[in-house]
Length: 259
Image (cartoon, rainbow, N blue to C red):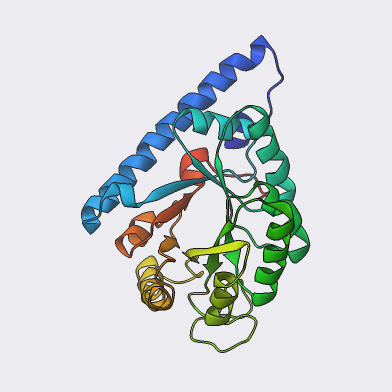
């Protein structure tokens, strides 16, 4: 049976109980495997496993999967698109479940007012203009500061997302973006996020990121979080200092083409 079939919507009522129980068992097994990988990676790196948080990336999967993961002890979930994340977060909240929502996808400025209503962390701020828009939205739509990670481009490719390290660009330069977030009244600069560039070996990518992060923390010593590593490369990310890993397929299975 394909992953799409096993995670497709089930009608309500008694008939839904069996597939729901089966899905819970799938997720429990995957979560056990993933936690074991994280623990092993931390041992290999000489780190305390408590230093590394798991973010379950639930994009393209239904709110009931997020609810099942919460039952299994997951506290942090990540989403890429506001149009999917907003109703999913509302459904989870309506069920009385408290999860920490991370927005990790490319964020358009016109979506900021929606995102600040449910996100606890936005990990993909990569321009001064976006930081300003998010700050304004958070000031109007929240009663507490919003945690922000600046997404940094490891390979400094201006075509892809991410602030540019070692660059004086007034909108996209890492220093300019970090300073704008750090001085925002309704944002809190918490650290960095990055994705290994296509074609780069994880060791090369995350070693480069560790160097960027060291310089970043020298300028912003309170911003200690580092979100890096996914299902295929989390061990290397942990070895190079990741405090958060974003795991999707290893937990939930292969996604449909919608994500």
